[in-house]
Image (spheres, rainbow, N blue to C red):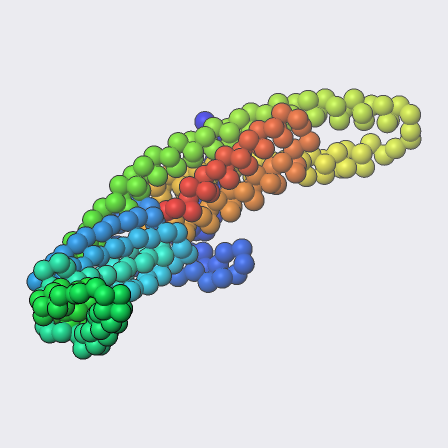
Amino acid sequence: MARVDPVVVLLSQSLITSFECDGQGESFQVVNEPEGAGAIASMTGYATAEGSAPGLRWTWEIRSVNARGLDIRLRLPDGLGALEAPLRKRLSDRLARGSLSVSLRTTRSEDATATGVDAAALEAALAALTQIRAAAEARGMAMAHPSPADILALRGMADSTAAPELPEAEALLAEADALIDAFAAMRLAEGRTLAQVLSAQIERIAALTEAAGTAAEARAVSQAETFRANVRKILDTADLDEGRVAQELALLAVKSDVTEELDRLRAHVGAVRDLLAAGGPVGRKLDFLMQEFNREANTLCSKSGDAALTAIGLDLKLAIDQTREQVQNVE
């Protein structure tokens, strides 16, 4: 295995532990570590739960998608606004990143009892019955008089405007705790699969980095032979200062050298492995490292000057892009 410059390793570690801005200069802030900090979690998740009381049913729902930070949106019924602050605290204590939508919907259950008669509905029903009776009598048709029970059975006649009593906030918060537990567990389960995918992809990047190192060594040999042959031709046909020619060739060799890029790629591979092993909310650090990976791969391709090394560099860029797509899901 190729030797990595310890200075480059320290630089990579420094980048992921103390970086303050991304490519656009936006400030980063280290967020609180949630429970399960030793495992990778996905930012996508979903959970639902239901509850009921006399005359009332309700449904909890929580879902999340990717986001740069933690964004919590709550939709609560009227009269339950007191749940917002404790819900936000519970969610922020357990989660570090993601765009969360939390809703609590209430509906009347079939066992809801009527409290009287809707006066407006009764007036409309009686008017309609009068109109129907008049039309029937005009045609010589006899109609029986409806009973009060018949009228009360008409749709919308029962007055149920009095809302059933809402459950206590503590009871709803206890349900919310169980819901958040299930939601966090789902994100961790997805995170375990995601960590396996990322591990396989980073090993692919590591293998391509070593292949690039091998190709760079082979290129150096052929490049040196080409340089020597060209120098002999030039010196045979022109009166040039050999020392000056040697300086220019050395400068060309330095410009095309990819040792530093390969060292930094290896150091970044090690940093990603460490982050995956440590777990927790490491998504931002991984995303930052993907930017550094891409920077080094671009430089390597621009310095290549060799078909084999360029092909490996392009494969490396593809692998980095695929890895970055997965990193976008990491909390």
